[in-house]
Length: 332
Image 1 (tube, one colour):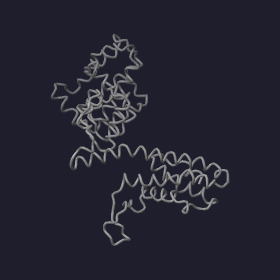
Image 2 (image 1 turned 90 degrees about the horizontal axis):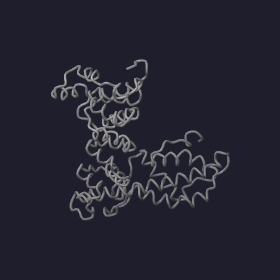
Image 3 (image 1 turned 30 degrees about the vertical axis):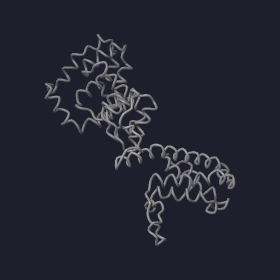
Image 4 (image 1 turned 45 degrees about the vertical axis):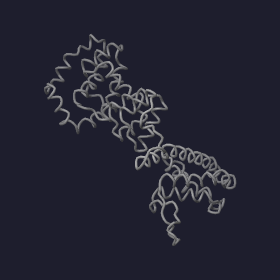
């Protein structure tokens, strides 16, 4: 390999993943009869000329080969890295046949095995963060990589809601069957039923709330254009667009994120209201901004509207929908 060339992103990521596992990774290799230094022997046994692989492409193939020689049972992140490296190698192979012959010699992979890794990289990389964060097993990802978009979206939503479907459940979903996990939450008893109801609520409610907030943010950004030109924001028109959606968004947020508590201003314990977010927390700021937007009496005068929207409102809603603050920081 030409050491004068800087390693690409996939190589750097592989090195970060592999180093902490160097000791553990060598154990299963030694048990299976692979001796230290045998990777070099494998390298010598691969006749790249006979495979029709150009010399300039060999470093990419060797990086992938070395990866598989170094790793044992692969974690979620490593499956993605391996898939990326194999996809890169396949793209540089003169033919699918040459790639399959190489992957069998260099990585001990069958055609299906190599295809599984590449499918994970190609089809699941948009959801890589959540899959890695949930430590989804490789077997589950191989099945998910063949799923239709709506099935994949459903499983990812379950993962975000804290659910961990098994390989069998995922196979049933992908094949179009009905698994036990799809039982109506309203018919599941006890704690499991309550948790299932809560998951279903989050799964359906979060996208609705986020979409509502995005719509509000779009209306605000459109209304702010005069402000950036030194003019007043059209207060009445913006109130008409935001007041009611803000009230609903705040109620949805409270329903999704906080429990109820007794009203501190009443002696009657049976009077309850949604709990509050921690003082000065970011979600507390979101709740406060939605409260203000939901009552026109709390809006500032037209001459102060633009600054308020830029400084307080836009950053809070951008935080809620998960986008980086931009206009608020540069034009306030």
